[in-house]
Amino acid sequence: MADAGNVFDVVILGGGSGGYACAFRAADLGLNVALIEKAEVGGTCLHRGCIPTKALLHAAEVADLAREGASFGVQSQLNGIDMAGVNSYKDGVVGQLYKGLQGIVKARKITFVAGEGVLSAPNQVTVNGETYTGRNVVLATGSVPKSLPGLNIDGDRIISSDHALKLDRLPASVVVLGGGVIGCEFASVWKSFGAEVAIIEALPHLVPLEDENNSKLLERAFRRRGIKFELGNRFSGVEYTETGVRVSTENGKSFEAELLLVAVGRGPVSANLGFEQAGVVVDRGYVKVNEFCQTSAPGVYAVGDLIPTLQLAHVGFAEGILVAEHIAGQNPRPIDYDGVPRVTYSQPEVASCGISEAIAKERYGADHVKTFNYNLAGNGKSKILKTQGEVKLVQITGVAGEDDRVVGVHIVADRAGELVAEAQLIYNWDATPGDVAQFVHAHPTQGEALGEAHMALAGKPLHVHD
Image (cartoon, rainbow, N blue to C red):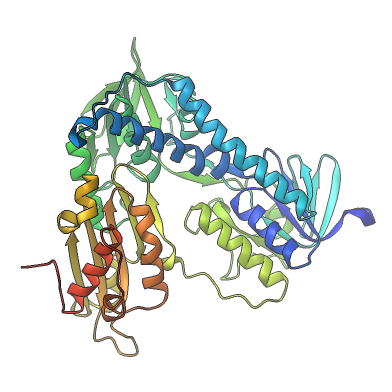
């Protein structure tokens, strides 16, 4: 039984994106919070995911710019990749952000408990032999890299994204198993650093959750960059060779490389943590929740990669905030997951908000869906940056009770991740093409492409012709 000093309004198990966002917001709302984390506050995103991978991707961009300086009239050359220096830069970014998070925990007077906790009762978490009781408990235990049956990740020649972030050398060649966000981002980094890369993806396209047009544009760009990929073909086995690995696929092809990166997704951390025993329903490892992230156990919530929503740090932030406000009686609005921006930070970047053309046709009927593709060849800033790609809009028309609004914005280009902020506003404010067409976008910017695409869809194109 917990002593009086260990009773809190909210006890949070897990200090990653969802857990610490919940802790920060709950503390702001005047709640007494305990945050329990077995490693470091910040979780996967800060230490083994979003931040370090994007630092690597920026280093890769610098490498490309050095290599291609002559095309801009700048006499530069790439003399090599210093992985010790790259890792020092990456770790420095992580370290600064980690220090900042620790300061916020202290400033908000959150009780931070270092240790591996378990849910010992619906309202209790036990860690380091001590029990913490919460009037509300939030589960935020995150996820870990997955593998496939019979595929052993040894951390040496067969690695996960966790291992890839700690490599102290540049591999000469890599096979990437999985063409989703993680696989494409690492493939992009290694190609920019000078490695030979091949991706194996069982589904018909790279980044298969994106609109098919985005996938095809990324595939075209990867071909130009010399990144190989095998689509619609399943992994069948791997064997060690003298210099690395040989990866086989079900259609009889084989790929040899120094390393195999297993990037087949991430699975929830829920086993042996007492969830089911406390009355929390778990399905295939994921905790089941309602629209307010409440589990089947009274007073117990779950957020982040632990629940079957989009595995994105900003989704974890949003869910953590939602839970804190729900506990505090703020009556928050549930999250519209279609309205969450999604970005693959490869070169070029892939960004989207809303739904794909295929999903729109399923929901509203093909006769009620219009699309428009604006090619960035007509965008001045994209010409300056020497980037190629498109903005694709998906609009519904003639649907009873619905405005003729834009329900999907899909972008492929360098810096597309910065453009998706406006796309998020367009989708979430139910904007029509005419609503956006009247806005004046700064020139020359890539943001103009969003304006021009909406102008064209509204029937008043400027730099567009048939």
